[in-house]
Amino acid sequence: MGVAGTQPQGLDGRGLRIAIAMSRFNRPVVQAMCASAQTALTQAGVDATHIDVVQVAGALELPLTLQWLAQTRRFDALIALGCVIRGETYHFEVVSNEASRGITDVQLQTGVPIANAVLTVENDTQALARVDKGAEAAHVAIEMARLRKQLSTTW
Image (cartoon, rainbow, N blue to C red; front, side, top):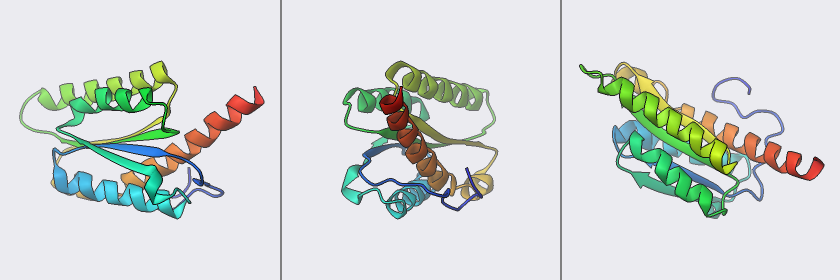
């Protein structure tokens, strides 16, 4: 995919429609990730008016929201943004695992690529150090949208 923080060579987002579903939990981190994703998308040529952002309460609400977005058939790819920080209970693992499983299930059921950038970290410092994962998810979303289009026209 390229070096972290850089755009993969030949990435072309022109003409694509991308939706971002983002969790409000751990808001400062996720907002920074969203800004990073939006910047990466527009730098790759995605028209800013073709980027939709939907906010949900937490990571567990992301899969259903992504399913609704995929079912509209309006988007070439989706991006999931969230941040789950380990606490003192097992809840961290439940949220992390179920959000990830749900996101994977949605893309397999709908055929719409989803770049999963739900961070699972130990603390705020680790989370803030990874806000560039938003840009990386944007690159993955574009790459997968292009691959999907290419495969649908060549096979």
